[in-house]
Length: 231
Ligand code: OS5
Image (cartoon, rainbow, N blue to C red; front, side):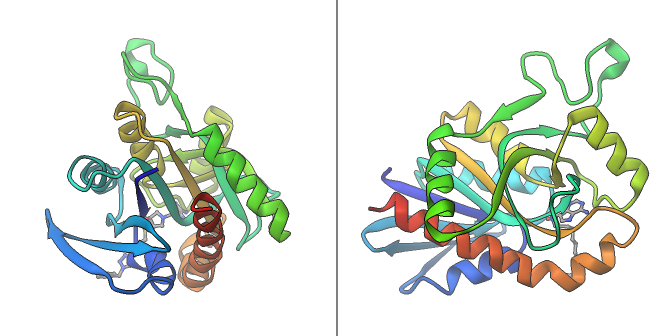
């Protein structure tokens, strides 16, 4: 790895990461800020994309094509689907899909476009490192499927559709678009999230209550993974 991209969607998701770094150079590009730094000899670019698949794709592409990042790690929060996931718990995606991508009218399955695939897999090597870090530090993390769409999900009906259609364990609004970009550009990546709500009728309240603490859970674990990658 020569340059690492670390992404979140919201400022709250990268704030607890930036606290670990000094001598940060800020570059503005395409209405966004990119934080460039060196951490124990490793070049890193950090950014939050803003919410949703379009901004996330733009940021991931920019980090890879303009800033030259060759590995990408996403850290943030998610709505939980798998009942094993409680607020604050960690999930690392082994694959991601777009739950709102729908050309079923032409006989395709939900989430599929011709010349694409329903699921994009994350880097097995990065997942392995993350699992080693978890076991060394007594951190509980589950590996699973994350579904992405341009919707803040706050109803049982939508949540159950996503659960039954994609067998997803958690949902959010950016991961799968980052996955599509990284896959197309041959950049190894993973998506790590901590649960902020359970995508039900209380999701809006829970999200406001737990965004900060869950974003920190994800960031604290991510920093440990970066330390391991840099050994
Ligand atoms: O980035 C979005 C996806 N994130 C993961 C997530 C999620 N996704 C879908 N459904 C759920 N139930 C989810 N739970 C966690 C989180 C984030 C959700 S959208 C949050 C929007 C919050 C907000 N909007 N306006 N403000 C806050 C105030 C504001 C105003 C001006 C400038 C900045 C903030």
